Length: 388
Image (tube, rainbow, N blue to C red; front, side, top):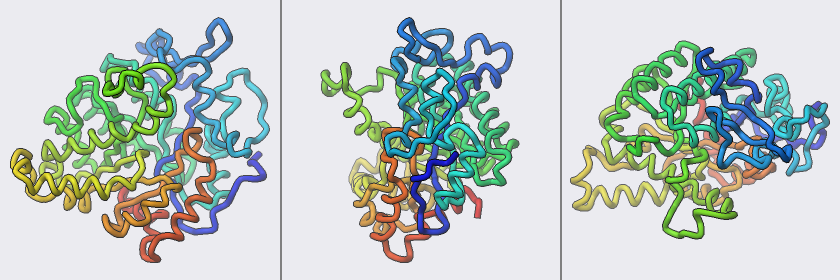
């Protein structure tokens, strides 16, 4: 039953550009190809009864001590939790309404007055940081992609599946992009790192962008857990111990690096119809970033990159960015960068974002020029994914 105190948006035409689901704990046991099922991603309990993630038969070094129980608890933090039968698995029992069931998610959208939600994974943002085996990583991704298409299939287009396609091997990524396109998927994402340590814009990945452009698939860069070698080492005390606050706040640094590599390697000139979205790293920074990119492009350093135009021109032609509803400062950036380049996103049901996303969205929209309001609410994201 839907929580009685759940807020409702008073504005029409709203679309959540980056919501999440909690995958069933047995997803990979059911959806993996038979030859990989013994190595499935699983949630297990340790000797103390605390849940941890198992990846390729090994306990996760980072997702342990009931960490998974926090992932979907946004409603609980907001005091909106609903009653449900306990299963004995905290990951499931703490899940917010609509986080694991498609019918519940549609009921939630109706109550919140949201037209659609673009859906990204939860466990899928965790396991890749501990899976260096390219074939297994792509098998995990294929399993999730098949499942999310099934999950969204009865929603009449209101739940929009976004595929997970790791940059582990271009030929494997190409095959998966072609498969998910046949399933009707409109976009895919990758985390802001690669196991090869070659940037996203590197020529080794151009085959992926060529296929995405050919198929009309939007490419998104989305934050995730990252391998330990990616963690900032500038400050030694921030690479160990209880530094989750620091790591969460600075996670956008990896997104910016992956995004900037697309300019470094001339991706937008090579693939002028490729569409790129920058996700869950805030949006207020993009104004400064584009100005800095343009300034360096106009300096002698600009001659070292294969770009025909200032970077801001490519952004306004081929890129979009999602902002958090509580980013009030972005209201001043949107008119400068371009009203048609911004989305909003809830991050529901993840507990590292505030549960008052609808109230915050109302306040943010009120700060915008009238001409930008409907665009931010939903028109931009639908146009980006060619759903309008």
